[in-house]
Image 1: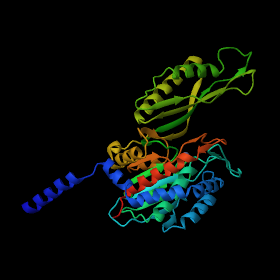
Image 2: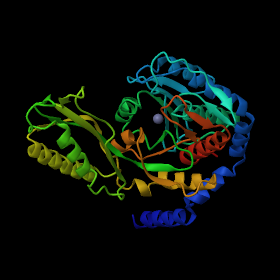
Image 3: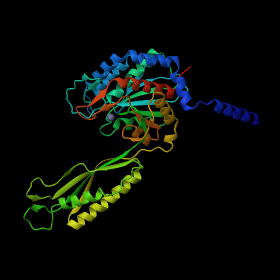
Image 4: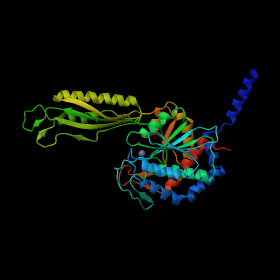
Length: 408
Ligand SMILES: [Zn+2]
C-alpha cells in the first residue's frame, strides 16, 4: 500500500512538473501543423464562407419558426462525418466524435431571428461590410461553426473529446432551446460555449434581467372635474424622478432604465391608468431584489400621497447566472489564452445575456463569445465587417481544438 501511494505521489509530482500552463498548451496547439493547415483552409475558403453566410441569413427564422433554416443548415452539415439529430425543442445537434479521453465541448449558435415572419431578406455587400437583418445575430456564429467543421475535416484534425455543434431555437424569445438542451444534457457536458454577439472578448457570467410594467390606477375624470383626485400621471412623474435617484451599483455590474410610459388616451381627461416600464439588470440577484423592493416602496408612497393604487405586472424575469468558481475554471483559462494567442487583449468581460445563462443555471461551466464585429443588431440596418470574421473563425477553431484536445 505504501509503495503504491508513493508511486502515485511521484506520478502526481511529475505530472505537475510537466503540466503545461494554459498559454503553453494553446501555443502548442496553435503551432501544430494540422492546426496551421486548418487556418490555411479558412483563408482559401473565404469566398465560400461569405456566400454560405449570406445564404443562411436570407432564410428568415423568427423565434419558434426555425425549421426551414434548420433544414438548410442540416444539409450543409451532412457533407461532414457527424452524428446529426434534433431534440424535442427543435435544436439541431451535430456531434463530431472524439477519439476518447477528452471533455465534451458544446458550441452553441442560435438559429432564430427577431424579424417578422415573411420578411424577405436580401443581403448587400458594400465597403467591406455585409448588410442584412440577422446577418450578425446570430448567423455570423452559425457560419463560423460550419466553416470550422470544414477546416477541421480538411486538415484531418482529430480531437480527444467530442465537439458538439448545437444550433438552438428560440434564444430571442426566452432561450427555450438552450434551456431544454442543458436540462437534457446536465452532467454530460463539460464546457458550454454560447456564441452570440461578441468578437474580441468573452464573458463568463449571465446578467439577470427583470422587466416590469407599473400602473397607477385612479378615478380618472374630465380635466374640469374636482381636484384632487389628480390624474394618475402625477404619482407616475414623482415616482420616476425618485427611482432615478436610487443608487445603482456599477460593481456588481447593474443597470436601470425606464423606457416606456403612458397615460390617458385623450388630452382632456385625467389618466385613470398611468403606467411605465422598468428594465432592471444586474449580475447579482441580491441587487435586483434590493432595487425591486426600493422601487415598490416608492410606488406605494407616491400612490398613497396622490390617493391612487398601484399594480405591478412582471413582463419577464430571468435571474443572474453566476457559477461559483467559473472565473477560475479551465474553460475560462483556456479561452483567455486563446484570445491572447489570436491578438485579442484584454479579453475578459464580466457578463452577457444569452444562452450561456441557461448552461450556468444548470451548473455547467460556460462562457459566451462570438466570431465577428457587427452593428445594429435587431434592426433592419444590421451589418457586419467581413474581413475580421475570418480571424474570428480561426479563434473559434483554436478554441475548439484547445478545449477538446488534439489527438496525437
Ligand atoms: Zn443573439
